[in-house]
Structure formats: structure tokens, C-alpha cells
Amino acid sequence: MPTRRKFIRNAALASAGAAIGMPAYSRNSIIGANRQISVAVFGTNSRGNSLTGTFTNAKDCLVYGIGDVDTRAVAKGQKTVMEATGRKPKGNQDFRRFLDDRDVDAVVIATPDHWHAPMAIMALEAGKHVYLEKPCSHNPHEGEMLIAKQQKEGKLVQMGNQTRSSVSLNKIVKEIHDGLIGKAYAGKAWYSNTRGGIGIGKEVRKPEWLDWDLWQGPAPRQEFTDNLVHYNWHWFWKYGTGELLNNGTHEIDMCRWALDVHYPTRVSSTGGRYQFNDDWEAFDTQLASYEFEDEKTIHWEGKSCNGMPIYNRGRGSMIHGTEGSVLMDRNGYVVYDLKGQEIRQEREGGSSVSMGTTGGGSLDDRHIRNFISAINNDEALNSPIDDANPSVTICHLGNIAQRLKMDLHTDPETGMPKEKEAMSMWKREYERGWEPKA
Image: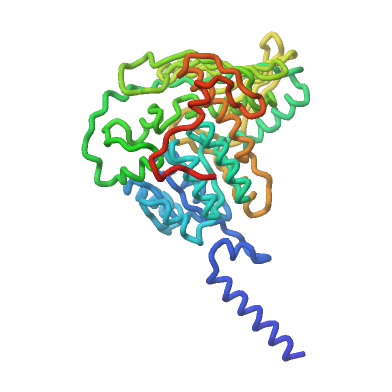
């Protein structure tokens, strides 16, 4: 018996010693281990730096690395972690070094839109879980490829539409589905802001701190211009997706969620670039309309350069039904009767940034906590990519309709338009050798 006890004790010590040298994903598989998810954050100049702070403060999470083509943004992300923990994470201009690192369990992607799906696909290929900022794609086909890749690899992908983790909105959406306002048939989504112009860009020498080739990545090459990096890429079709996907994704997703619809049958849009005469290619004013089966509709009103609020809010969603209406935003909800008289309301616990470009707050906290718990404990994701992607594709369809100045008739199962002109915009052109592969 003493010999047997000694054998068991030595075997246990040997196993514990081996675990210390194992990569993160192996340590986490040990029964009884205190799982700490190791993440690398990509794109930390603005929104990504806010996410860096949230992941740093999340339970059972270690921000292991910071990846950004801008060395200043790498330093910014490292500083955020150091101020919270006293520990400096690894930094690299080339995110691919973290995909090769077996100590990384998951990646957080907050880069420009043209990198979202290709980077997520590369991360899945490398065996990483992915937290992906909205929109999950630069074009509809990338959304299809991303879903196919996630299903093939089996890793988790959560999109950053953090309102899906709202306690109050989950509650009221269930009530809407249960008939609170009768048949819910129409959603009104909006975003109003007072953005300035971006001027006329000039070709200049690229900054020393920037890896311009890697910044462009999958996009066809061009010379560096001085009004593109960092934020203004949102308004150029080669890199961004306009206000409809930059902010409208959140509110349109709330409407789709409440109305319980998938893809539309008809899409129309009107608008343009009205406020400034500059390089901004997208629209600063847009009215997009979507018709769905079962006589349901969603309407989006985007005003990038006119901050006049709707229902006293800069952003939000209103759901109309046969017996009343519900106003939803990041702060909670308000229920109204058919005459517009308030019946009741509920405030969301905590607070979240509503109109700022960096985001942050309690909804981010919950959404990220859900992502980590899904990895550790098989908790269901609040916004898995196969459920999030339809909201993004719907927004893409609005832009396609507006750019072509024509109505689209779409398949309610796939979202694909029947018009050949529209299908020519279903995909995009890639720099040779950078094409993503599902």
C-alpha cells in the first residue's frame, strides 16, 4: 500500500508539472483547472483599445497580446493592460504572429471592416475562437464564407452587437414574441450624429509608425493618402461599409430580433452625400426600407451629419404592433399603448456609451463575459455568427440598393437578390494572393 500511494503521488506531481509547461488550450482541458482564456486583440487604436480594457478586466481572461499595424496603437493597447494589471502583454505589428502562437486561445478583431472576415477566417484556420466586431463582413459573400469556416472548424465566433446581451432587452423581446403588443409588424431604426467633413486627401509618404501594406491586406493596393487612416476609412467603399453597417447594424439587428424575421423579400433605399463636398464615398443621409414575409417591415434612417434626435434619442429602435409599441435602446425599453401613452419602462443596469466611437460599458462587459463563458462552460453565445450575419447582410443589401439606385427583390432564405446588377456586388475584388478561403 505505501508503494501504491507513492506511485499515485508521483504520477500526480508529474501531471501537474507537465501542465505548467503546456500551452493555454491544453491547460484548460485539465479537469478541475481554473481556466483562464488567453486572448490577442487586433486593432487597438480606438474601439479595439476599449475592448482591450474590457477583456483585461474580465474574469478568467488574460490579454496575452496586442496586434496592430500602427506601432503607436500597439503601445496604447499595452499601456491599457499595464495600467490595469501591471503586466505588459506581447506586441506585434503583424497579427499573424499571434495566430502562430499556441498560447493564444482566442482573438478579438476590431480592425477596419475590410479585414474583419478575412482575419476571422485566418484565426479559425489557426484554431482560435473569435470575438468579431460588427460588421462581421465587408460584403455578403464574406459572411457566407465566415459561417462555412466556423462550421468547419467548430470554434466559437461571437459578433460584437452587444445589445444582444442586454438583460432588459432580452426580457422585452421575449414579451414581444409572446404577444405583448399584439402582432409586431414594423420596426423603425435610426442613428443621428454631427460628423464633420474629411476633406480632399493628398498622396503623401506613409508614416513611419504604419505598416501600410498590411493595413491594406486583402484590399487592392493604392498609394497612402492623408485623410484615410485611422477613422475615415469607414466612408470609402474599398475599406468601409458606411453608416448603415458602422452603426445601423446594431439597431437593425434589434428590429430583426424583436420582429423575429430573417432575410427580406424586397429592399429599397434613397439618400446621398449631402453635407460636404469631399472624398466621403458613402452616404451621410440614408433611408433604407425592408419588406419581409408575413407583412413585416424594417425602416432605417441614418443621418451622419445632422444630429436631430428621433424620440429624443440619437439612436434606437421602435417596434410597432397591433396593440402598442416598444421603444428599445442601450439604456432599456419603454412600452406604449396605441395612443402613445407610456405604460411602463425598465432601465438597463449599468451604463453604456451610446454615441461615442470607442463604445464601452456594461453591455460590453456582459457580451464579453458571455463569450468567455461559452468557451469555458459551453454557455450559449448571445450572438453566434450564423444568427448575427443576417443582420449584417440586410445592411449590405441596403447599401447595394442605394448604390445601384434600384429596388432589390431578394430570396428570404439566403438574402440573395434576383437582380444581376446586385449580385455583381455580392462579392468584392481582392489583392492577388490575399483572397480568403472558407
